[in-house]
Image (cartoon, rainbow, N blue to C red; front, top):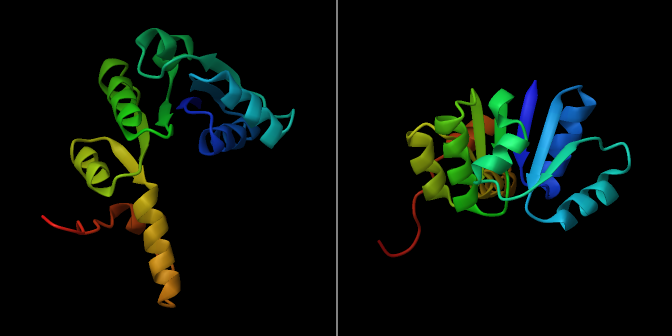
Length: 156
């Protein structure tokens, strides 16, 4: 499988290492060279990956990372807007078959899911798991946490 990952932080670099170990072809994009340096320190010298330094919403950067041949595109930067825009470009401009985006804002994650971008809201997943653990409930499946629509809290 050919995978392009946007974001070489903890999640992106760990995912890249996991996929590389399984024999998948992985390219990682990040705008910051220090992110690549930290990934090597965290994961060791066996972390083999193709890296592209650049902005993940720039088509030339995406093409340099091989998005034209990608089976999967995963956006896991720390910015919701960057992840969503990059996911839309991957999905609509390059027609990548599977596109995933990490989104912190539960409301935004739900809105983008409704227009066809598969999102993982780590806020909802984490809060849901803590909630279940706190109340002594069995943990649900990841899909149940992802699909859980948390009501908006605060003034409407």
